Structure formats: structure tokens, C-alpha cells
Image: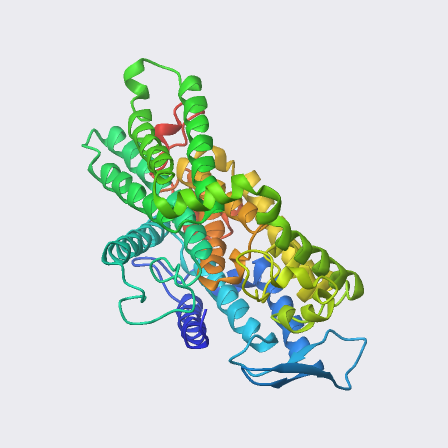
Length: 480
């Protein structure tokens, strides 16, 4: 959430982008007719994202207000601007501003484009998913050790503004959302590795490892004490369990061919057990008990804040108030509802976000700025549907996790955290490409004489067929 980490992320994303578009050859093959740059030019998200970045840059170059003040008091003054162009607030970079938002959005755009054009094999996505799972596992261990040591500092060194942090996340709801995303990846990998072990007649050792990772990650979600994250954890477990049961009932053949259900069932039982036992932890129980005792009071402040934010949206619905500028103009609308600053624990509350990303993004970007986002999401949905992601466990679980995180964004500002936003965006691309590799029956390496499969992404390496595509009903033997 700090400027130095976001700038570091942008720099790393830029380096990765340069490597991904650098011309390269396959060992033993001629130079590809489909160069990375040419393939990137056919990527709709590249152009839609570029349009969004240009839109936010115009907001930064055409400020309608100027921030003045310090940490004790601040205000904004109107300044001359072009009213027929998008505008924002001129503010220091270390505070929220269009240029700060451009840093985060730019990192996301570069990273997604790098993954799309740079990863041309399913093996690459398997490694990517494994790295995300490992990262979340080690973060969950960090969170557990911090809780056991009763430290009030992140990494036992940095004192955050929020004492209820988890692992390296200052705001626990952000940590819970990230761990739920990683849990979806881990559950999908455990199922995929078990299917592969059964197909190769090997012991499911890696599947058991990822089940252990998943239980630890689920425990970290619980330790975050994020009520919505825990609810979504249970929702993921129950939904995934229902999908597994449906797949099990539709499977043909002797019962011995259905043994792939066992590790997934054990994993889901572990996730549900961790979620239910979490209600016995003191802090989590207190949060759920308080919400149950006073359901109206616990949501009253956020409902009023959404009402005020809705009035903001109606006043500048086309161009918005500027990316990253919600906190500057919100007080002018919140003053009609002064009680939102004192509802809750009796101390003065601060509203830097609307606690509803479905509302905050339109307020900041306007309908014009949302058009590129809608184009990107529509394209993702079309490609996922065409690839039949429901037939591939890893992609199915990832899409389910991304969908639940999107629901979380309706009641909190989880996408305002770059770690959650970037992981969510990369996982969508990864699930889509993983599905396309599965649909083409490829194991991820081009062989001379194999015709290109343009439906699998337009790159000749995507069409690598290690054998004939088997008919439906034998999908456990097709692909890797």
C-alpha cells in the first residue's frame, strides 16, 4: 500500500514486460512467424488497458482541484481546467492521486500483458500457480508466527497503523481476500496433481503437499478475523464440494476410476473444519457475535457512506472525480451525514474509501473510464466460456475464487490493495490460458509439423499435441 512498494512493483513489471516481448526462438525451430509483439497487438486487453491508462493520465494532467494542507488539516481549491475532458485532483504523489493510481494500474497492465505474451506453455502456468501458492503458504506461516509471538509489528520490525494486521497486510480484510485467492489456486493444483498421479500410476505426494498448503492458507484467512473472508472461505469449500460431488456422480466406469475424489474431499473437509473451528477463536467470535447482536448498527455506517458516494456519482457520472481521488471530494457529501464519523467504537472514523469497489471505481473513473474495464472483463468471460473451463479443475477453482473475491469487493475495498488486484488479474489470465491448453489437448511444447491452433490463443506453441484428443468421458487422460 506504500508508494515505495508500488514503484518497485511497477519497475519489476516493466522489466518483465521487456523480457516477454523480446524476440526469441524455439530450440531446433525456425524463428516464429508469430512474434511476441505481433501476438500482443492481437490482445484486446492490451489496447483496452492502454486506453484506460491514457484516460487516467488525462485526469492527472487536467486537475479540477488542488490539494492544500498537511497531516493535521487539508482542503482542496478549484483550479481552471478543461471541463470537456476527464479531470482529477492535483495532490502530492505520496498521497492518493491519479498519478499514484496510474502506478498501480500500469503495474497490472504490464504484468497481465507479460503473462499473456510471455507464457506460451502450460508448464509455465503450472509454475506460476505453484509460486503463488508457495508465496501464500509462507505468508500464512508468517501470520501464524506473528500471532503466536503476540508481536505488534509486521516482520517484528514495522509498526503499522492498524494493530489488527495479518502477515504483511496492514488491513486484515485485504489479507483475507488474498489468502482466499491463493486457496483457490492451491485447491486446484492439489486436484490436478492427484489426477496426474492416478494417470501415471504414481503416489499422490504433491497433491498431499498442496492440501497441507491449502489448510495453512485457510487458517491464515481465519486468523485475519475478516468476517467476509471467512464467510467466503466457507462458501468456497461448500461450492467446491458440490462441484466435486457433481463431477463424481457424472463419472463413468468402475468405482476405482473415481478415486480422484478422495484428496479433494479431504482438502475440503480440512477447509471447512478450519473455518468452523475459527468461530471458537476469541477475536473472530467477538466480531461475529457483535454483528449478530446488532446487525443494523454494524452495517449502518457503510450504508450511509454508500448513500453519500452515490450522490457523488450522480453529480459526475460521466467523467468521475479522478482515479485515486475519492477521499478528497467525499467529505463535501459526507457532511450531510455527520453520524458516519462516529458510528461504531465511539472514536472518529476516517473514510478514504467507499468500502464498495463496485461504487468507488465508477465514482473515480466515471462511465467513460469504465468502458475499457467492461471490454476487458467481457473478453475474459467470452474466452473462458469458449474454453469450457468447467472441465478443468484448476481453472474451475481459480475462476470460482476470483468470483468470490469479486463478491467481497461489493462490501469492502479489496481491489484498492495492489497485491489483491494484481493477483486477481493474473489468475484470470492464467485460468483462461490453462483452459485453452486443456481444450487443445496440449502439453505445452511445439513439435515440427503440428498445425497452429489459433483458437487456443493464436500462438503456434499453443497447439502442441502430445497425442490425439480423446472424446468426452475420458478427459482425465487428455492433457497434462
